[in-house]
Each structure stands twice: as structure tokens, then as C-alpha cells.
Image 1 (cartoon, rainbow, N blue to C red):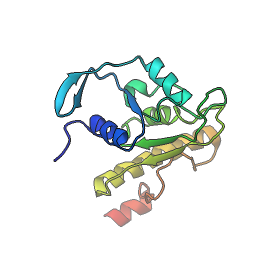
Image 2: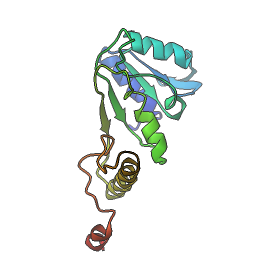
Image 3: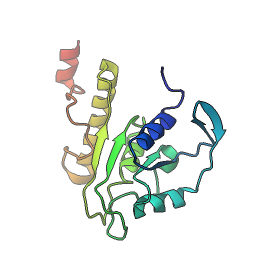
Length: 169
């Protein structure tokens, strides 16, 4: 019962709820109605413009759409609904994660975005999220002199320190 493509499953379920959805992923094939088909992919600029005008309710992006695309509730866009970024799989490189979050968190926004990170709760995933938070804290401390950052995954214990090493051992 596992879907062959997570992107296609998310798009299918989004469409079933009555919301419109497209993707900026660089994929050329997709699974529709159980069949592999060639995508009629619009350019990323067309999809971005449709989203910012309100013609699309949701956009799925991967690394192909993680830089240079404005998807925020900007003052110059027709659709100024608050944005929600749902991060299903965080990139291993922390700077790519920051870049991806920057698609919905820009300088001329009229509404702050919500960013949701989905984790399974498995210990290895929790450890990876804690390591990611440690990197984000160092990055934030270097740029703002503050270890707290809006991009931190909340609810993850800070175990990446000498005390955490003792607790884990």
C-alpha cells in the first residue's frame, strides 16, 4: 500500500480535498491513475506566477525549486494568504534548508509564514534534527549574535553538547 512516488501521492491527496496543486521539481514523469506518464510540465516561472496570483493553492518543490523563487505572501502578489511550508524531507546541507525556507520567508512579506517539519519520531531522525538545530544555532549566533532562530525544529531536545553525550552514553 506504499505509494511509488511521494510527490504524486501528495498531489493526488491535495487534489482530492479540492485544492489546486502543481510542482517545481524537474521531474519529467509522474504516476497518474496507476500509470507512469510524461508530465505536461509548465515552466517554474509559470507555476510560481500561478501560485502567487492565487490560481494554485499549493506548490511542491524539491532542490530544483529551492533557490530564486518567490513563494511568500508578498505585497506585490495578488494572493497574500499566509504561507505554510511543509518540509517532508529536510536537505542534509543546512544552507540548502535555509535557502528552501527562504522561498516563503522574504523581505516584503505581508504575513509571516508557518514552517512545519514532519518527523517520524525515530531516534535516528531525532538525532539528525538535533544536529541540524545545533548547526542552525551556530549559524544564527554568527549572523545575529543570538543562538535562537525561527528556523529551529522546535520540540527536539538539545543533546548535541557535553551533557547530551553523558545522557546518551
